[in-house]
Image 1 (cartoon, one colour):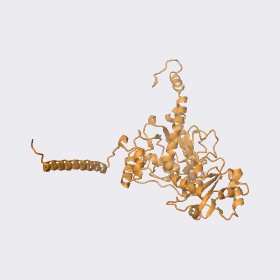
Image 2 (tube, helix red, strand yellow):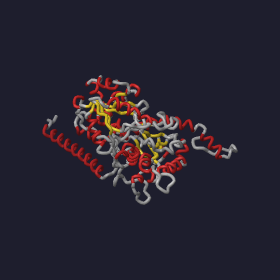
Image 3 (cartoon, helix red, strand yellow):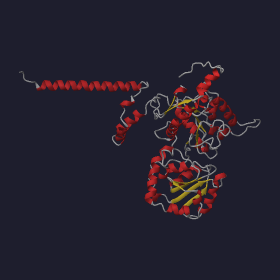
Length: 474
């Protein structure tokens, strides 16, 4: 038997290792080349790490964390999205035209890769959800998009879970609700009338009687003329304060957060001992309708040493003053005003100032998945107006309990941030998920509606002579 040559064996192993390494380098280089060409590349979701694995990476090396984020934010395949929406191509006068955007030739939508139309600031921003949701949906099929694949726009209404109506109703009310001289009605009212004609004439609307249509009406006074006609639709609202329960209710509609105006407290380390003010409120005090309680509380609390209860508005640097006041306070009052909700709640949340909610009829965003009692204090109006009740309650909350609520606020504030591009679990993504949770109930209603619909249509088409035409599916 011949003797083995150890040097020859080592040389062979070394050569094989070199060839193997070169093969890996070539594969990686080719993948990088394909990515650099700008071609859309789809990653098989079955090849991605599980959620459990991702959580491990996030606690490990930043390289793995960045890689998993890149993998999870790839081109949005409709099969992977939790919500598929068909969006009407409404003329620009209903959406970005209200922002003075001028279309190129016959285009309906702006090219978001070139320029994004600006939304007006100030108080307009608090009801700007229509803007953020429309931007997110328009970009959902962009190959360069790297936002979460939660909601995606589809071109076939038959594949859609919901039909999205992109009317910037809050902006229309804020900017165009006044009647121009020589005109009989306002532009806002004209748009609502034209919207009703457009939507109700569509086959998609007739098939479901509007039950699978999404209408954005976040400002309490938006859609005042159209809401009584489009009431079967799903409304996205700030609250139900000015709605008849037969028109809007929690069963079919969702509540979305205001866009906060106060600055988010980034890297907040100002804990219990670093916030000298016990209770803070800055805003309009004399309100109509349900807002009378603000006056009562003002007279009860204005002389308390640890309370800052002041008139305030957006004017004269009011937003910055409110931000500073909330950042230095342990608790922030959120009192019912003209309607049950206000933007102040969300200013308090992103300031990590524990909200004290005194609004018996308030409905809160995403409450089916969020337990607000973990980071908010709820007080009934009848109790809050009792002498000494509110101060006694808040002074009885010690450092440990307050700190737990403060830490929870720092965890949940991301759910109330509107962004473009949207990010995982921000307000845009949370709204899509809330709508997705409505889909099974909507399908049930639509399917029940169709029990007799198809045969009834067949009878009408036959002229009642009993000779039915062939119907798809039967």
